[in-house]
Amino acid sequence: MADKRRPLLNRYPVTPNYLAARADAIAFEATEIKKMVPQDNEVYGLVIDLPMGPNLLSTLVCYANGAANIYYNNGGSLLGTSMKYRPVAHAARLLVLSAENCLADAEKVNSYDLPMGRMHYVYFLTKKGFIYRTVITPNNFNEEDKGRKLLFHLYQNVLAEIRIAQLKEEGEKGKGNS
Image 1 (cartoon, one colour):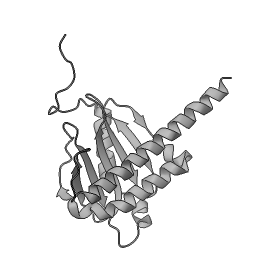
Image 2: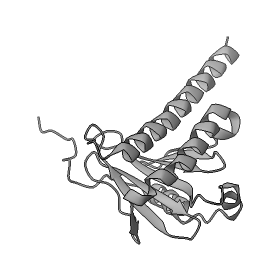
Image 3: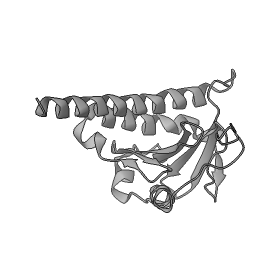
């Protein structure tokens, strides 16, 4: 039986819906959200591509107002969780406001490629309209990667809060069926 898993260096399969949602998130100018960011901070949003399995890629999008959404390469999405669950919004705000500390290690980009293998691509959306990217390879941090480690920890915390919110939703649905 042939192994049907995607080789590590091939691209993830994606749907047009996913590509459009991701492109919209990267291009989102967020005029009102930019006003919420402290004056000395430049970052107002993050778009983070996270491989989750051999054929599953997710994109976590967080803004300084606490919005946090996830888009999946198969066209699915998880939207609006931060509007109902304050811990999700708090974690997303903390992530975006802390991202300023990692901007110096990022490079300015004009194209927004999808990751290959297990690399996470973190795109920083800035008030001046520039977009920067840093690459995080989980379980491969060195002593100089303190900023990337913090960033990784903070976006994992957003994902954990979203998962807790999902479990609460499932629990509430279960109670309604009793």
